[in-house]
Amino acid sequence: MRESDIPLTAVSTPSGMLWEWLVMPQGLSNTPATFNHLVTQLFRQLRAYAQTYFDDIFVHSRAGDGKTAMKVHLGHLRRVLEVMRANKLYANIDKCVFVSPEIKVIGCFVSNVGVWADPEKVKAVAAWSTP
Image 1 (cartoon, rainbow, N blue to C red):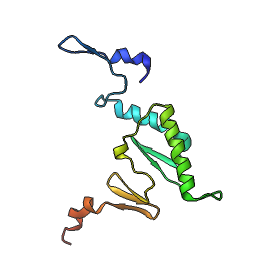
Image 2: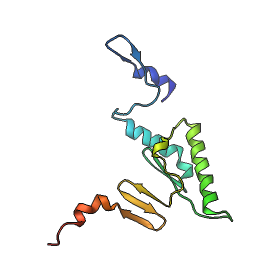
Image 3: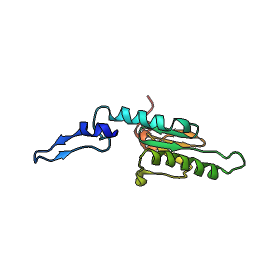
Image 4: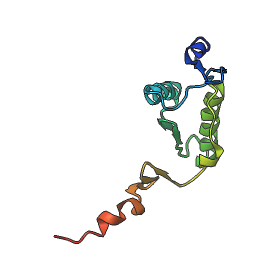
């Protein structure tokens, strides 16, 4: 949040205390669009290996230039974390998945072999009888 916008978020409590948001609060109507725009712009130059989806960042890498996929991936992670640090974006370590051959993304699994639906999400549909 811009320093100049902080006073605009002031809220007075029944006890007379004044609260100001120092970061963008969740729940405001424009918060998702504003945050998504910010993240998209910040990581635009890293698009070759870092995709964003609201507050999720997906980093993928392949071996190249005589480096192993792991070495390339660690370099990509470092660059993503540098952008986050420079812009005061913080990761929730409990939700982070590092160096995984497969991840779950909005109801699907993604890996180097493709994308497929989470079996738990389609279990009910798969159990329907054929007409």
